[in-house]
Length: 312
Ligand code: NAD
Image (tube, rainbow, N blue to C red):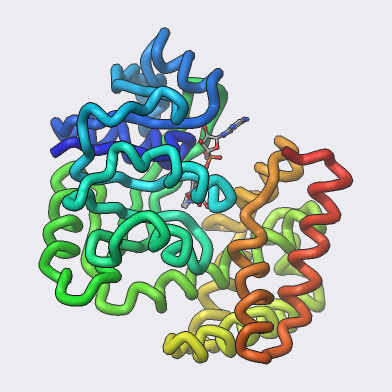
């Protein structure tokens, strides 16, 4: 099976390394020249659960793609705002048989993917694996994780189950879900609260959780997500989701961490995925005539911060 990892930053590198270690034919495709050149020259270097490893995986820039060999599976791991350009660039690698798996955070990526791939070949999901990019050609991979995925096309359940088993053979701990949009919305509620609020307030999750308004803000934002989700046929259990979000405040587990949006925006002055998290709720809210004032404001405040910090 010829696998393309389309977007080989932190997460793409993790999946690339694990699938490569699992004996598969993996090629990384990425748009960051320094990163691609470092991997070409020195291999992909990873601190993998404390052990320093170097993996020699074929890699190319998006601009170097040619159509000589089609992919069987393309795993998308760009940031959300890079997705459309990546799909345009990998088009020469796509045949009628090519399956696409999207595990990006955020809501509504299928609308972008559908422009390029027939529905029956699209699989979406989310992942609890994590990864960090140390610099060009170097990643940090700690801990365990899992993947949940589902087919978008009708009658493709068996293909989705086979894809999950295939990923699990390389240790990715993947399983088929019969309600993936629920999981995607549930995870987006964590990102739509912790990521933007900790970035705007410049605090870790425990410190945000210790503020008096924290609970009210979380409840209001989760309710906006839930109201929109309901119009999309997803019935979120608000109480459970709020508890799930607030479990992030625990200093003994992940509370002392700064969410990834904080690291991208505040530490590295990179643009954020806010338009595909709270921004997606604002857009869908307008479509369904639902007021989403907290998501509207949080989206705009993050854009203010991007402008102030000159993020790119
Ligand atoms: P990433 O920022 O590491 O990589 C995304 C793209 O940005 C890659 O093409 C990468 O080469 C490029 N890039 C990274 N740093 C750059 C720089 N300094 N200059 C130029 N280009 C740069 O993104 P990621 O963390 O791998 O996330 C991919 C998707 O997975 C996102 O939707 C994210 O929300 C989601 N996700 C991430 C994690 C995580 O732990 N990192 C966990 C679950 C889901």
